[in-house]
Amino acid sequence: MVYDFVGPYDRPFRGIREWWFGEHLPWDRAFPKAVFSTSFICAATADSLTLVAYVKSRFVAPIKGISNVPYISRHKEGNHTNRESDEGEIEIRGPVEIMIVDLDFYQLSPASASATAGTTSSKTSVLPSANKMSAETSSFLSNSENALGFKMRINYNWCMADLYGLLVQMNRRILPKVTKLREGLWYPPRTMSGIPAPNSRFVLPETTGKSQALVSKLLNSQFFRKKASSSSTSPSRSTFLNEQNDINGSNHQKVGFHLHRSQKYTQRMWSTASNTSEDVDVTSTGTGRHRVIASPSTTEVDPNDRTTILRRGRKNDDEDLVDKWENLFTEDVLFYGNPFGIGRAESVEEIRGEIFEKILDRAFDSYFVEPDIVVCEGEFCGIHAHLCASVWRKSSWLGVALDYDDQNYTRNHMSRTTTGRRKAVESPTSSTPSCMYRIRFALHLNIEKGEKIKDAYWLIDLLGAFKQMGRDLVADAKKLV
Image 1 (cartoon, one colour):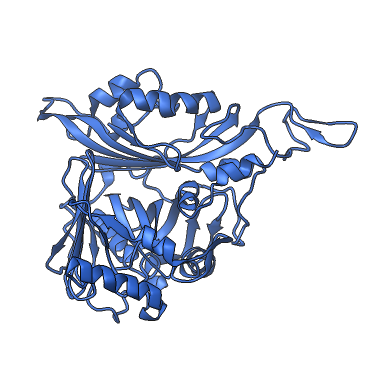
Image 2 (cartoon, rainbow, N blue to C red):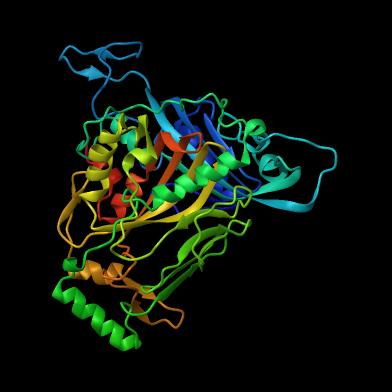
């Protein structure tokens, strides 16, 4: 098992022992009596599962370098055991109550190819207990049973928690608030599909197929895909790329390139070509490995084919792949960004102005999505992915300057090949944008009748993203004493 937590401070934990001492015990020390809300979204397939919840607890010990002592008190009144000193300052006399979003994606693999005869189970049998997996953890990981009756084990677990939200609730707001959206909200989806949603007994395959198609449409819309303009290329950058192309005997603007990246537990193959009109499918092998392969264009989604979880249509650089925003979202849509730092948008106009323009379009010159896992069941889908974003000019993201220079470009756009040579992987004018920052995020959707998004939950790994940009938010917070 691999446990992949957010933030730039830990490598993925491998095995139960590393997970136990690296994540479970620190979590229990920080939140010893944490109360998890019922996982109000829980979508599953035969070999994957995703869930969304939030935690209410008192923050009693540091975690991941984040102090449990507020910079200044938030509580001048209420039930907290704080009091006002003779000098008029507020003293903290007890742990601070916090709310933290917690969500997971599980890639499962069968421990045995044989089914257990005469047994039935619901998908809740592969869920952790409400208190972050207690003493039964080992047996749960080894003996979980999916809805088909096969013995299942967790192969890979992507876990995300709103760590920046902890900083804000400890009065250590490092980033300026750039949106006008209300913070601190993470309500359950508005649905009658059950809690957790959906109830698998009443899921129709055709609804799942519609939801998959909408996810493809969203990830290919301008919300999650923006190509760099040729005017953004500086002379020094072009010179650098041309020199590298001459050395390697190829011109990446004229021919396709293949970037292969493999790990022990996961493998993704990203294949792109500048002069192709083919779609690109993300497929799951069923063993925790994901790859992107070129395939003939198609507009149909087979609801019974779980392996097809994304179709990214490409025809030409000038074609507008964007559907009208009204075709993606309902009129009463609620779009939850990070509860602290972004907030909740309550209309299509707010999604466009406060989320899309301020968080994505104004900050980055190009970006696209690299999905790790997509899980759709009925009207609910979950996507764990990385936003591959680049900046070709002076810009800012969430109030922090992103200052481009050619040295950073050279460092961020070099790839070590299997022969040990270093080469530039692509040009900003190629059909696929370059990747300067890989911003981890999770997106969960409540898709009304599989046609339009009614509720969306978008959690970004802010600490990990800003670490790539040269800013350590936890270190900055420690300076506030």
